[in-house]
Image (cartoon, rainbow, N blue to C red):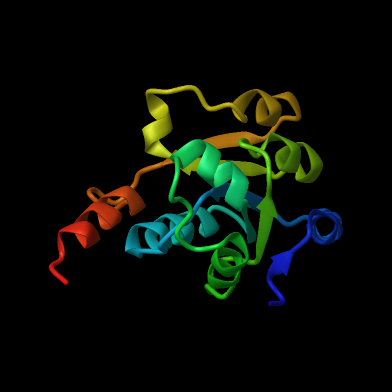
Length: 158
């Protein structure tokens, strides 16, 4: 679990990246039922900089945002899965419903979210812009989402 980090460990790594003049990219989400849409998104995010840290909503915040029965996979397991991907340099679990505190702490150079935020407010945007970071909205793979995957699973006969 070397790539599953506490916020303090991530901050130490962030300081080292700054010393080296390297670019930190950050994104966050639930990443419940990891699928190819997630992988595509994370690979594209990683290509924007030298290192990619991923914030993972904890179990309570996932339930608060996604509803009863979610998450399907516990946060520690989601973090281990994400941390094992070649494109993810660090996975950080956070308990709040937004990643604002993590972003304030790490101040990534680039903050990436899905293109679905073009038409709705991005709560972390003011924080990123306040310290001079860049917000990038990444195109998502069409028809690839955890919600769609769950719906498809529910139609499979037992």
